[in-house]
Length: 408
Image 1 (spheres, rainbow, N blue to C red):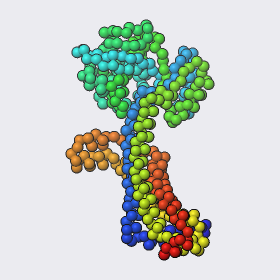
Image 2: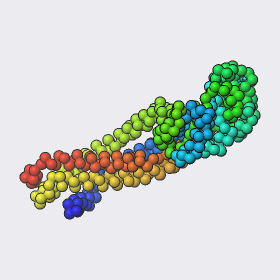
Image 3: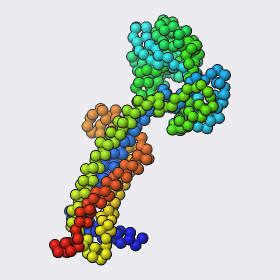
Image 4: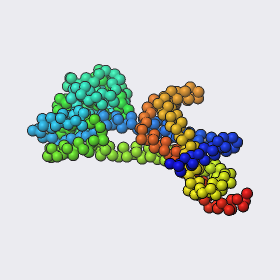
């Protein structure tokens, strides 16, 4: 305890002396560099997370589900549903069928789509689907067998509105269903929008009864599971496979491995690029502290003569680096969180000043911060300053007390 007291005392005395002159300016600029580095990286990661999570949430809640179960036999259905209802990790279960389709309007315009047959009350039982599938026209109404709900991009490409008729001219289905037909006429009951453009341009929903009539009897029934915690997918799959023989299960990680892998790589590369800010800041702090060490070599010699070891003296400058880092990283973290939470207003402000309409588009990107990432960025800012000060003090360890005093 006494060791830390005298280290902190001497470091505090150095700080008081350094509050005036060029040393104070250098120390202030070093902390300012850490502050803006932490703030910039926090904002960039927040915007990147918001941009990517809008894709990921839409894919997991609308397209892939957290877990897909297929191969449930007719005699196992009741036992399987009872198992899912009793499992505390499972939030809801949605049976569905799907097939590849080619839609055509009366004017001959065409658009490809995954046609998914879901229960009529799917939007009521699945809160995640209701949250991500935003109905912008009409309703999610599949009570009639000829009802269909389509993505807004499909509606735009085929010039469809609520109440319009659309023909699913080609449908993959099974061998007992016609591949091409002019009789699969559906009425558009609703148009939806979500955060992933591919779903808006390639998905449509019909009822399970309509799916049975149009897909054929051989089309497999798949159960989409939503979990309370998406990270429990492997555990839930293991439980299901141990309870039911002959079923196939796939989690969201494996189902979306390619796309999610690209997003993760994009995020990591951007993180590394912005991390270069701390390299520049660390170099500046290193040069500043190296100069400070040599300016204090007389005081260092006196401390050594009174019994201070080289590592004790080096710890003094490490404390100095900690102060520089904490005075920069802490405000930078709070500023980054504040800007990230108000990113829409920030982009609109810059858009109003510059007159660039692209800022209005950026303002619609939600920002999302994860506590562990914010803490990691904070630690990068703090450790860059401490590491630079530690390296700067390395040169003084090569000098002896007699050399310093002789020079004086």
